Image 1: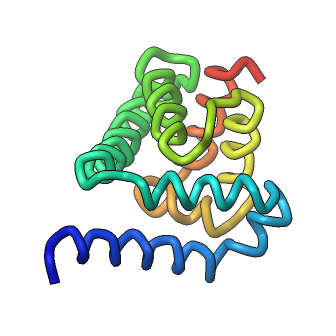
Image 2: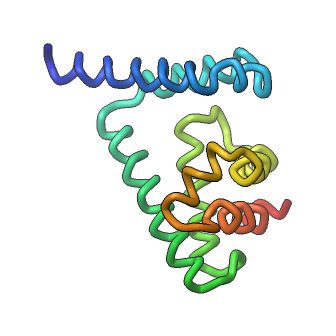
Length: 139
């Protein structure tokens, strides 16, 4: 199996895993077309684009941790984290929507699965990211 075939299989497995965990919920909340478009965007990503997404996710966590040390969700570093988070979403969303970004950040706190993801890196990170995104989006 070539590296390209392995990479394509990896992306298919990521989508299948996401479908198992969140597919029905996402379709109910966002609609079939939105979910399918997001899945197509992921399948069309190159290895370089996927690597960039992974690096951006790590950078978001690092910025978020530094911003939490500063303690100000409206501070420069927190706003860098929120902006980068919006950019990261852009790889999966057809267009950036500040209201959707704010709602997603709220969900990170309200949904224990997502809260645990952020808080496992640093307790309180989900709430801090939410607050930073709300400042960033003006919502």
